[in-house]
Image 1 (spheres, one colour):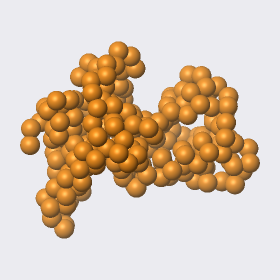
Image 2 (image 1 turned 120 degrees about the vertical axis):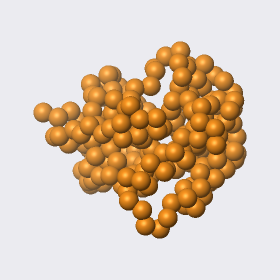
Image 3 (image 1 turned 135 degrees about the vertical axis):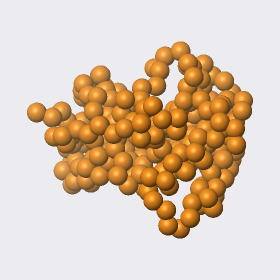
Amino acid sequence: MQPAISFQSLQDIQDLGSYLGRAKRLDEDGAVKFRAFGDVLAVYVAPIYSGSLMSDGPTVLGLRTIKLAQPVELDSCYPLSQILERLAAPKVDQMLQFDLPVSPVRPAWSGVTPPRQDWEELGEISQAQVSEWAKAGIAEVASTLPSEVASALAAKVRLGIWGKTVSLEYHLPGAAAFAMAGLGFMQKDEQIKVFGTKGWVRLTAANGHVLSKQSFKIA
């Protein structure tokens, strides 16, 4: 039997639905990874990822955590579309829980596991600066890609652009800024905290975290 996820409030369900809805807009065929060993659920998405763990393209993970009503043991990925369908079911609002799909999936990024400990605070970046990096990357993608191009080539071009370093101080890839903006993690005029450990960088805002490998690709 597949485990059920039990929430403490309707607000938690709505927040999760909003988060995953944004993730689906960034990757229509995307997946979500649920990870829990107790009453805290870690919810990962990957708005930008390399199709191979051996590739040098960026893989960027969005992360939100939710305190659950009941502990659960879980470490699986599911299509975003299926989870959003379940969250929208009327009985979920009434029962504050939903059953997971029977068949998990294994997206290309599912094996990417950021460190859980030893994160060191490195500094802060303004919300305005992160948003500007995201807008600049979006504009470059739009101006670089022709109107008709094979999907594989388009993905390679996007990875190349989003893999460029936007902050030499923190070795931050542009993909991380794109994810922070696209997933709606930042509040206006917020100072975004930057953490680092073992070649990884993490942006932490009021509504979530973005994690990626550090980038050394100069534009």
